[in-house]
Length: 197
Length: 197
Image (cartoon, rainbow over all chains, first blue to last red; front, side):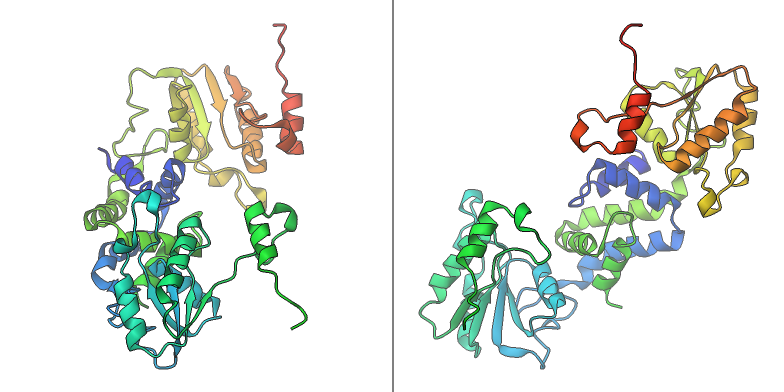
């Protein structure tokens, strides 16, 4: 196969990149400066060598323990449970959270054959038992799989002397009622917040 | 800068890839198989070495003359003038054209200081004079710059004994009148096709 077709084929395997975007990217790479291509190729080639899962929280990191787990300024009484390593970055970037994280590595999905044995709940439980956490925030995605996982975690942790919370679902800020889907709207109504407190 | 941040920074320089998509791609690359990353990196690193502009039509190619220019089954009486090398692929993929191409390398844009001296019209003219073309199809983009370039070409070629055409503008197939913008709709009306012929 020719180099250009091969490059387009490889690029179109990336998530969210279709055939058209891939060919657009390929032509951009043909026209871009050689030094940039070299650096991008190097970063792609070496990323797996320098990144590994943190032995404590499963998040991706260039050091072990990861930056979050080894940060002494973090609130070690708070744990936020997420599905994927990238969720750590997303929540971290929000600036609204200063506790620790735990990455499950996925969500329960009976339809896809992903059950409790496929996610490392044991590691989570023993970490909670050994640590001095006061609150576990379940921040799995607001999807069927994420909600199922949240419910499972809730039952798993109910015996512990811990506050268990779930991040709020509702209308996104800047959104418009008119364009909200039924499920989001009904969840936003059900989870309404009192102004009298 | 750390490797992951560097990879995200490089990826976000690609056209159509913002900060969020870049970080999504980076995490995909961390989790993908090592052989794929190696191949993608290799393709990115070598693409500029193997691709160069065709000396006849300016299109990108791994051989010179390019595959289209050296294809003896092409209709050499037809020339399609496009802005960018990737337009050759796009029109070729439509399956509706079997003539030759000429890549201008851009479009006239007085606002951005791109005038006739910046595009290689001389090469186009001498190619037309030396060849035996019967029709020149101007397939620059239906934008202000593309239309300006088309008008300029029309004047440049009007003395030649040639049929000069412009690809049609109008409603996209599968589109909906309700969602068409005013300019597209007025162009579609002005360019209406008779059913009586």
